[in-house]
Amino acid sequence: MRLRHALPLAVLAALTAGCTSSAISPTYTSANPDIMRISDERPADPEKRVEDLGSYCVEVSESWNAHGTTPDGKSLWAKDTARTVVPCD
Image 1 (spheres, one colour):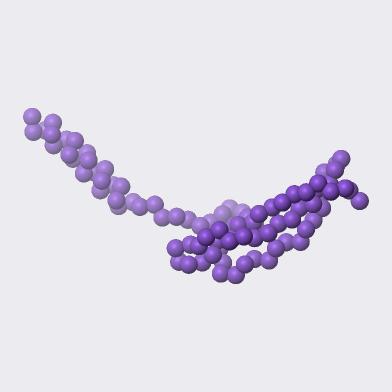
Image 2: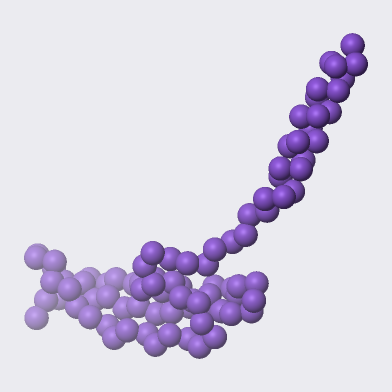
């Protein structure tokens, strides 16, 4: 009878110890640094460009925007992209 009450308590203790010991720490990395950066200085915005997509052209403009900070106080920068259909030259 004691074993029936002790087993759930042992499982609960093991789960609690396991969950508290392995806290998830965030990672601020990207496989593509062209879309996210960590820096105190704002990255320079790329120049607008026009892409020819066959039957129409698209003007692409990109800008860096702040998206919060890391735990150590550095700024997170993410690149936003806007596309507009324009006449081809």
